[in-house]
Image (cartoon, rainbow over all chains, first blue to last red; front, top):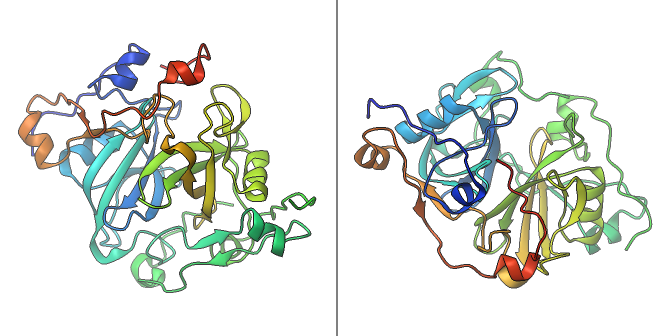
Length: 165
Length: 165
């Protein structure tokens, strides 16, 4: 692994940011950038998280996904506890460089702390499907995956649940 | 289209939010929820945006993607200006319900205000690829798409560029 830290460039112009070759990410007022993580093979959305400069630098250097956990307020090497490390096959940045897209291979196949393969296991009916079923405006989520890949209690034990109400 | 507004449920417990059938989305302190939009056929990440309650309700009712534009501070029916409407094939919600995933079909095939098919047209080298090329820590983005689907000047004219430095 290279000893040199990853260098981010200052944001100087819209042309540089949108159509240049500089990596000039925009971290928000909390110092975070939004990250979208998909399965490199299936295209399935696995999770959406955040990185600070340290997490982005480590992800680039190591090729393994690092995030910043807002609930625990720590750098988070994904898979350090669960073993489900995400190997980054491709890291892309969007037009205005305020979002990172990770295309990953997941060891063990799970990305969700609840135990499912993906965090997105429930569907909201839209358009005609909404109309037919929800005449009073109430929505029942439809499950797209009922099979847990692991048992969260075995993997995380007594660690606090990251979900906030 | 149903006359009833879409009803969101109050967030009462972790179990309800993570493993129940209620749609109980978490809007942040700005009143927004993160949205990830992928091409329903290719799995490609097209864009990442935000919705407020109105945008989410309209998306569910109409089956066409509505967002909240942070730069313009308005409800944004995607495609109203450019014609590139996003038809929602599937709308999913994540475990803690603070992120929406839209799987869409895009009329005309473009989602990026710069003119590309996707907002994600540049790659950051990671791991060994970073090591080999960026010994001083400097990063050169690699382009994955050079072909614009439309001319932004023709489509948007004098409208201000949404990219903020």
